[in-house]
Length: 159
Image 1 (spheres, helix red, strand yellow):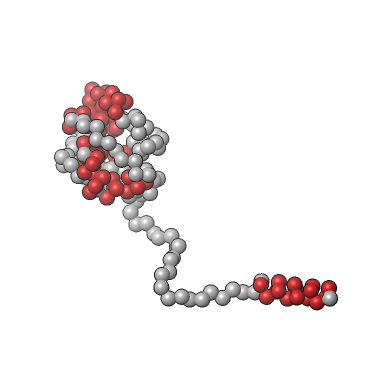
Image 2: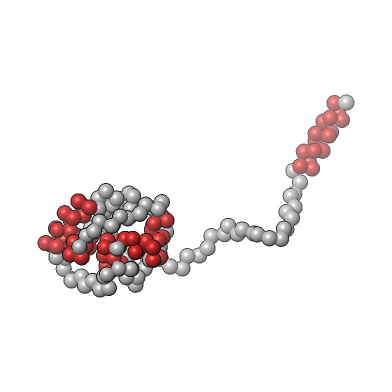
């Protein structure tokens, strides 16, 4: 009797370890292969787009060759007052780190995001991607003037 039970257990083991045959079913099929990303992306996976000027009142920003120290100082004060709750220079927080932002975004895009975050989040593909990347943490409109936004933009050049 023991030999019979052992033989049955061994037979079951051999059969269960056999090659599985997958059935091909009609309908939905999911391919988990990684897709090749053609556009450059940031560490967050958001595309880099230097031609996108965003949605808002700013269509052209002309940075001089030299950083305007007085404007950057005013921008630093405004940044410390308004932006540091969500942004740091080199570390991700509620919002992205801002060091090197002009290597990823145009100055116009940055200023439009500062001045018109509601419109940007509704219409701009990069802003939408950032919103998704940062768990739908919405950038609130701080109601800055264009002069204040320009000062913050100048400060961001110093990071």
